[in-house]
Length: 186
Image 1: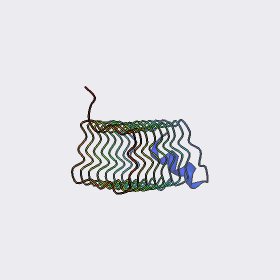
Image 2 (image 1 turned 30 degrees about the horizontal axis):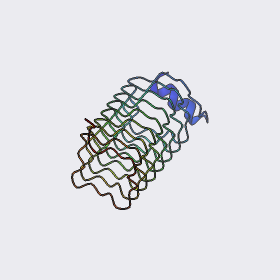
Image 3 (image 1 turned 120 degrees about the vertical axis):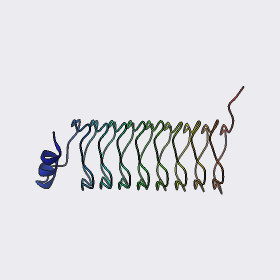
């Protein structure tokens, strides 16, 4: 499926594009809110500034995709693969990212307020100045992640792994830290 076919079908009222192959597609600035892209292949796609709010991207492959400034508020990204994805300045407020793979993803200045990232892999991710206030972060792998100046106020960090993570100037007021690993066990 190409960009024009996707947009034409969406304009005609179709919303389910499960397992569509859109790798390397140029979808910058598109409005695909409430779209179903479950299991879709979007590796390397350009989705800068796209509106995917309340969309179902569960199980989607978004490795190396550019989602800078995208609106993913309320989106379902459960089990999505976002390795090396760029989500700088993206709106992920209330998004579901349970068990998502965000290895080395760039989430600098992203809004992850009230998001659910339980059991997600954020190892080596850049979360500099990201807002994770009130997010569910239990059992998240933050190993070697950059969380400098991140807002982690009132988050659930129980069982999270922060080994080798940079927490310089991070805000942790009211955070639940039971069982949190702050240093690598030797």
